[in-house]
Length: 422
Image (cartoon, rainbow, N blue to C red; front, top):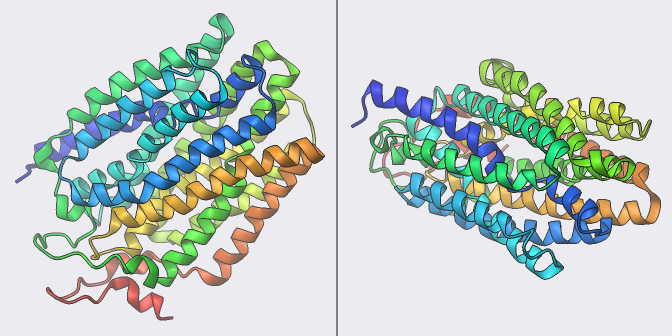
């Protein structure tokens, strides 16, 4: 049985874990494209292909990872093991920079990294409960973005002084710090039934069948919107990094870091805004705002190649991604309330999300080679606009589900079923 002191310790440890895992959970992230372009002389299409292969490995692992987090009580150990695998796989890249070894190492990193989103959300729900979950997720995202901004600033300064390989040393340090933070979360503070989405205080309740992932219509609509969001969003930052690197190889990594810092700094207040206001203003409204930012951003990237303009436009990424990162687990928790399938549902939707991201980099690389960077940015923006239309007309407001009474013990009626039937 957890105590208030345990929950306070868990909250502080989650703050630290989100801060340090910010640099670990995505491995090399957008720095991979800059490193392969400038140091290894790969072309854009080849970079997009290897990034897509790695993302596909994450897609395959994502839903099983969510099911694992639902089932296991060793959530801290799962995160610690994943952090170790991501780091080791990424650190091998400079040693084996050919296509096949890079594809294998990045596939391992992506497959391990998919543990973090459902695990952090599960521990957050298991320690904070449904009523405080939106605020806790907003806090998670605030520290995550602060960690990303700090890591990107260090990478940018370090790359200017020592070259792009500084990102590998930074990743190793952040991984060690994240391991310490994860293990500082008190195990007894985590209610594992609550962490998988069962109702507060209803230990022993049986979870719903996996069919809920296919019978909840709003979850399917949400998944479609998420695919379109990431099909649009995932390739934008790597494309900006490539444009910057082609203008000035020596400044490519530093300017990429400036883009990331700019976006992450903006993400912090928007994540806080979601945590503070989403329960009052509506969850769907925030998600729609995240989608609408992307067409604007894509169009603005085409207006100038000036590095300062590109970094300035990247501030809009902070608005969209800051909102999306905070509202995503909240909407899934709404839809899966009392089902016991919260984390596998996260995994399933993130699988769809990852598919969009994987196709994004390949699509963008092909469009760049065939028609140029401006055409690629406009194509990506148009995809997000389609997602916004789907959101407006097909996705209901999910906030009300969080206030629905739990089903009677032994029944299979789901809170989402009332909306699914609409």
